[in-house]
Structure formats: C-alpha cells, structure tokens
Image 1: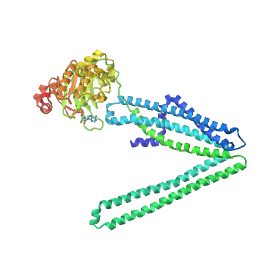
Image 2: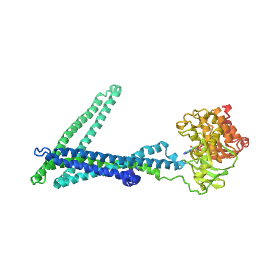
Image 3: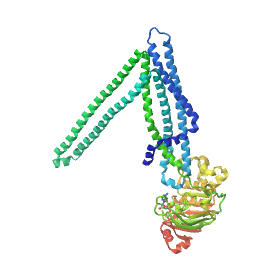
Length: 589
Ligand SMILES: Nc1ncnc2c1ncn2[C@@H]1O[C@H](COP(=O)(O)OP(=O)(O)O)[C@@H](O)[C@H]1O
Ligand SMILES: [Mg+2]
C-alpha cells in the first residue's frame, strides 16, 4: 500500500501517460472538448477586452452610438462562453465515463482469468473497491487534470496575450511583482498558521491536565496535591496566554503587512501606469482592462498549481489497477484438444502447498480413479480433501508430482477443454440473481433446450418445488438464491451438473449442511447423477462411503489408508476411528 503510493510520488507521469492511452478511442470527444476550451478562453479574453471601450466610451456623454452595441456584445460573449463550456464539459465527461467503463470491463475480465491463489491473496471486497472506486477516481482524475491543464493554460495565455498587447511594460512589471508579493504573503500566512497550530496543541494539553486532576480528585485530596496540580496547570495556562497573544499579534501584523504590500504593489503599478499615460501609451480603459485581466488570471494559476495533486490521486488508484491488469493469467499453455474424456484420473505423488503456508496441504498422494466408479474421500476437517479435488479443474497447481487425465498430464490440455469435463457440486452453492432456468443452464450450458433442462431439473429431484413456484422455471430466485432453502439450492446445483453431463463429477460435502429430509432428496438425486462417470465424493454419509468403490483416507495431507469400506473397517485404523466418531446416518442424528 505505502510503497505503491511512494512509487506514485516519485514517478506519476509514466503512469498518467499510460492512463491517457485508455482515452485514445475517445479522441473525437476530447477534440470537441478542446475546441470548446479554445472558445471559452477566447470569449473570456474578449470580455476582458471589452473593459476598455466600456470604461472609455460608455460614460462619455458625447458618444451615443456604442451604448447599445456594448451591452449586446457582453450578452453575445457570454452566450458563446456558455455554449463552449457546455461542449467542453460534455466532451470531457463522455471521455472520462467511457474510460471508467472500459477499465471496469477490463478489470473484471482480468479477475476472472486469474489463478485461484490470487483470490486467497486479495479479498473480494478489495477487488470490488478497485472495480468501483479506483476506476472512478482514475478516469475522473485523468480527465479532470487534463481539462484543468489545457483550459487554465489557455486562459492564462489568452489573458497574457491581451495584456502584453495592451502594455508590455506594465504586464512585465506585474509578472515580476506578482510572484514576489505572492511568496511574501504566503510566508506571513504560514507563520500565522504555525503559531495557531501550536496554540491549539497547547489548549489540548491544558484540558488534559485539568481533566487529570479533576478525575483523580480523590487522590489529589488524600495526598494533598492540590498545590502541585495547580502549579502544573498554571504553567500551561501561562504558556497558553503567551501563545494566544502571539497569535493575535501575528494575525494583526500579518494582515497589516499583507495589505501594505498590496498597497505598495498597487502604488507602483499606478505610478508606472501614470508615466505610460503621460507618454500617451495607456488610457483609463486600458488600465482597467489590465487590472481585470490580472485578477482573472489568478484562479487559473491556482488551478494549475493543483494539477499535480489531482494527477497524484488518480495515479495512486491507477497503479493499483495496473498492478492487477499486469498480473499473470492462469497458465494455459496446453494444446491438446479434448472433446470428451474417458475419465481415468491418476494422481502420482502429488504434493500441494498454499502460498505462505509452511505445511503442505497435500503430501505425496497417489491413487487412480476409473470411469464408472465412485471414490470417496474422507478425513478430518483440514486434512486436504477439498485441496485434492481443487487440483483437478486446475484452480491450483500442485507443487510436485503429476495428475493425469486419460493418461495425459492435466496441463497438456487446453484449460477450457479440461474444465468442460468436470461437473462440481460443493457445499456452498453459488447461485446468481436470475431465473431458475438461467441458473441451471449456466455459462456454456445456456443454449440447452427446454426439454433437456426439464429433464435435468427432474433428475435432480428439483421439479417438485420448481413446479410450485409462481412462474415455474422462469421464476427469479433473488440475490444469491435468497428465496430458496439449502436443499433446494443444492438440488439446483445438481441439476446444473446433470445438464452439464460431464465425465467427471466432483461432490465436495454436497449434503453436509442439509436436514435429513433434504439430504435424502439430494442423495437420491446424486444417485441419478453418478453412474458412468468418474465420481470423487467428499462425504460424511455412511451409505455413500459404504457403496463407494474405494475410500481414500487423508490425514494432514497424507493418504494414510486406501481400500473399500469393509477392508478399512477390518484394519481398525484411522478410518475405523472416524467411522465410529464422525460418519452419520440421517436417522441416527
Ligand atoms: N486458500 C487457502 N489458503 C491457504 N491455506 C489453505 C487454503 N485452503 C485450505 N488451506 C489449508 O490447507 C489445509 C487443507 O485444507 P482443505 O483441503 O480445505 O481441508 P478439508 O477440505 O479436508 O477440510 C488446511 O490446513 C487449510 O487450512
Ligand atoms: Mg473441505
């Protein structure tokens, strides 16, 4: 966090330049804004220029012809300025908003391509902050800073040109005098602010001291410390008085000094202006115009000094975004196409460790799972069961060892092809704010026909409740399926897996959080799903494990026992112990 902002402080411009690249597609809008800014600055200068005839002619009784023209010109100029301002704002906002939109799309796209470990390293709320706040900050800062830089510069240039044209001598004098006065006034102001700050700190100390003696009044009295407390307070109060006087004196003197400096500046100006007037090079209107131009330049200059800060804010956000955009995608170097796998899974001495963990989550695990069989994975919580099944869709990569599908290493296949072979039902079902149908026919399944969809829902024992919903399969389920029970959600997930009809089925504690009735329905649905596939099931339910073709027993990431239920019971090892303590039948709960 702090090092990125430090980075930003040292080199904000390269980041800013990169940011502007994202505005390239919107050059027509930027150009439109630029034209607007030119007109705005020109209109401003035009208005200032009008000061001259206004002062020289408007109040001249012998001159009647211009008295209508000038007011009209003023209105005209402001119409131009207003229009130009609108065009500028529109073009800038349009570009800025578009850049924000593009960055958001890029960012979410990137996040969805990142490896699983990234989601452990960065919590989802932080990702959302980047999608929301940072993209907004970045786009606005980039665009606002550009707007200020260009439009304020144009204004300054226009005004300076006007002034130089009118009287080079006085303009140069203002240019010399202005900065000197500004620096001196700033010094005086800073001294005042410093002392005022110290004064406030002193006041806090004073309060604290009094508070202490009052709160400890019993101790103060019992130990006879009244005088000591008073003395301590007196010192602070006295200091406060002295500082208070200093603040007042500084404030008073500085305002006098500031005013005096302003007066001296004005006097000098008037003196030179008088000389110029005598020489016939300046009239009253010209002088007023110079003053108005000078005053008009000041806010533009102030804005220009703020640009750095604006860029800085945007750049810190931008660096956070670019860090994400520049990070690596999930590795996907496999070239082997895979239409439909047979489903032979083989783990060879697989070890896996999460980033930043000392202990491996999986330690030298080897086994084979064949098509048409069920492999049950059991073990205590934290023993590595979920980790094992997460390796198959390559959410994580093993540290060593090899995982083969149909005799080929997983990473030889194209990632999308590999994942197409796997249906996954986990304990926490992810549902999206959409209809039942859209949730079951999710992602690549969205083209599924109505019949197939209905079959899947029926097979998952879900039709029973879906039919009773007001709009059947088209019923919206609300955010994260809030209107559904746990068992109903689980059955929708099974319907999704059925529809996918993948050769590999992974069930990670799919029924662990359900009540007995739902568990029975879900279990029955799972029975429809399992045949002819390679099924890996992490389960606590005895009947699932009993009927499995093989049981893998994990402990601290190691595969400690392997065999059928009966074989493992006979060994009376860890499995037998777990069996007594942990596995349950719905009826026995
Ligand atoms: N995303 C993760 N980051 C770091 N450590 C993890 C992560 N997920 C799991 N672990 C750790 O890996 C070990 C195995 O976890 P897991 O496979 O989830 O166990 P199980 O599913 O058997 O309960 C545990 O010690 C767990 O704390
Ligand atoms: Mg788990």
